[in-house]
Amino acid sequence: MTAQTTDINTAAGVLRAGGLVAVPTETVYGLGANVEDAAAVARVFQVKGRPPSHPLIVHIGGAEQLVDWAEDVSEAARLLAEHFWPGPLTLVLRRSRRVPLEVTGGLQTVAVRVPDHPIALALLAGFGGGIAAPSANRFGSVSPTTAHHVRTELGPGVDFVLDGGPCEVGVESTIVDATGEIPTILRPGGVTCEDLEAVLGRPLGVDSTSRVRVPGQHPSHYAPRARVILVEPENVIAEAELALERGHQTGVFLPPSLADVPVKAHAVVTVPSSMAAYARELYGFLRDLDQQGCDLIVASLPPEQGLGLAIANRLRRAAGPRPSH
Ligand code: TXA
Ligand code: MG
Image (cartoon, rainbow, N blue to C red; front, side):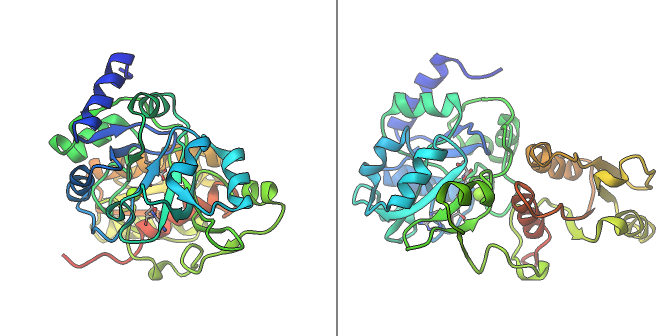
């Protein structure tokens, strides 16, 4: 049941009154608050269990509003905004004074994006201000791609949930630091490097933390409850059957090249060969395997081009070292 105009009006009222609204975007659902309401922003951190040093993204209704929220916007940043907004691109820029430091985790920069979802855009238009929204999940866990995910994970922590159906893109926005001379990717996401570079007409800078190739170096994030191990595609079945023999409730991400090969496991998902379909399904797959009681998930990385780069980044982070509990 997707949201109607009356729901959007209600949601705008909730934001004005200092409440939290779950907002569908094309990437994942966000947990939204009025950017300029310090108490509401504090509640976002609290409901997510997120450390206050992790800044939030400011969602705005159109590129023309950028002047209200950011300063010293470079030509390159403007070009990217014009080309990719509304869309899954977040630009890190120098913050204007309108952006409270609570939103930026004390930084002098702000992350801004215009989401490409009719309900999010209608809410932004109706509300009029900026909406600070991280993904609507507990800190460190898998981002929600349906309203149901938000409700089950955050429950009464959210005052109002706008249901926009399943998210089209399925992984978060690409974050580009546009404060320096060369725009640099901080997080691969829904807009590909190739597309960004084509528009810029030059290579992007590479951030040392975004493309680290050693899985163990990534602290876990975007992680299901089950432990995730990454192996070469041709070893997925053997590794999964070994884990099953060792008594694990094993879930398998079966690579498309092995789609019809039988595998002994507790639960199996066949990875789509289209990267767009894989990105759309990725978090749902992780949640499903958790739901089915898997304690271990065996997966492999897709080729790291196009959307495959963002998928591989999330899988590496899902497989990263966990805080001990
Ligand atoms: O697709 C998305 O980006 C979704 C939807 C809801 O818009 N949002 C999202 O937000 O993924 P969140 O909070 O889960 O991730 C935002 C990331 C965080 O890793 C944060 O550290 C980074 O953006 N970020 C925010 N402000 C920043 C800044 N000023 N400088 C560098 N990174 C920043
Ligand atoms: Mg998040």
